[in-house]
Length: 199
Image (cartoon, rainbow, N blue to C red; front, side, top):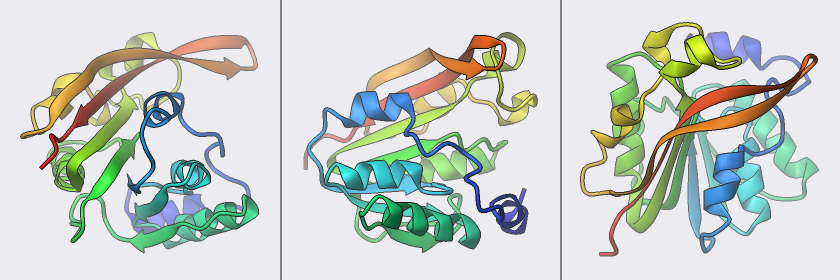
């Protein structure tokens, strides 16, 4: 899907995704001292808004102008401010690295996936943290929701092999409980957290 496809998907007044933050973002980011954060391919801005509410100087990058407009609206409704940048996560590069970089559910096939991960890694400042969460390959056959195409799903090694000098804090598969009309269901995510040593 390209930017125009996502513009169309985000065109509804309602949020496509929930406004609640991802549970793994909450788990890991809650322990960090607020600074400058980047949400790469941040869509409607739920992660950036949650971070801004906790004192982060939050930037949301996405190639959908419609999604970013909804991110600004969500921030205003929660009485916080975020910075938005309209750009493609696979090619964007920051000039000033961030203390926290998150990339959540950017389900891309190769080689676009590696390009986006490299952009995320390059955006982490000395002493900063990277959090990557994505639908795992195992979720296609054993989990709930997410893409049915294994080519756009992750394994932890997809992320760890491009981390460069970042040090792995956690890399593996995590189960996330999802509420459905038929009761709780389990989704399987790749979760990788890494940090860049202080300069």
